[in-house]
Amino acid sequence: MIFAYNKQNVGDTLMVLIADDHQMDNISERKGNVARISIPDGTTVAWNFFDISRLMIFKEDGQQFLSEKEIDLLNQELKNAGFEERLPDDNEPKFVVGYVKTSVDHPDSDHLHITETEIDNGQVLQIVCGAKNIAAGQKVVVAKPGAMMPDGMMIWPGKLRGIESFGMICSAAELHLPDAKTGQGILVLPEDTPTGEAFPIGK
Image (tube, rainbow, N blue to C red):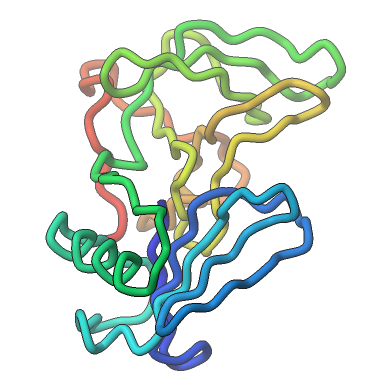
């Protein structure tokens, strides 16, 4: 889940992004101060909470990180509006240290690689990566599905040249780290960096 607030351009609305809409037509259903955004098959992809300052105050625009209490307030808004769905409790970090267990060449590309990358809680993700310097045995930064990059790009499961990919292995430039240089490939962390540890980004 991604929470975003942009009062200057959108108004006093909290946008909650649940899933990728795959560029399908969006269907909006509004009840009171809440709107459900879905795609034609009925899947909910987002929620809009209008006049959100009634419930919580955001000091800055951009991605927001809500507490369990604040998510409970949103779920109460859903209930009051007459929606049956509820927002899940999703407090896991979206940027974590990953360990590249394997990396093999993509069968249909001269520059993509298919990795098996371990993240938090021992979970292993298949991630397709185009960096020249990717290699097995590295510690890297992984943006998991549901992450929002500093430039606003959202990370969802997808396919690259027909191969499923569940996340992104990041470069320093993509993370907007100080002194990051472009064209340098993925960020490789020290070998003793704990796998699964949250990588500090944003608030």
